[in-house]
Image (cartoon, rainbow, N blue to C red):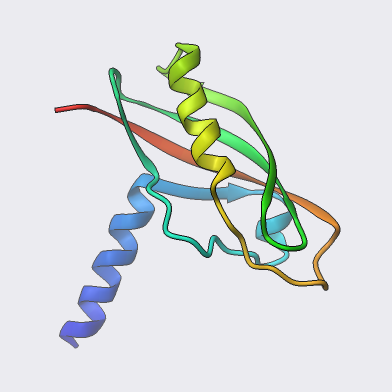
Length: 111
């Protein structure tokens, strides 16, 4: 029972800072396979949503900022875009040649 609670705590804690929001990749059951940090430490708090294009190998081939809450500076937006380019998704030849997904990054103030 304690192990189950620990696993739930980890999953809830990780999803509080990151979200795989929507897209054809989500609909086809692809998940993020690497351990990328979804919290970005910067000068302001807020969030940025990035749309990524994913090939059959699970690599992100393009990333574009589609929404930003309270984050306006270009260097700060580029932090989320660059982090999104490092994501890896489930690979497979049965997936479409290119799929897309939206990923949300949360910004926290550096302490």
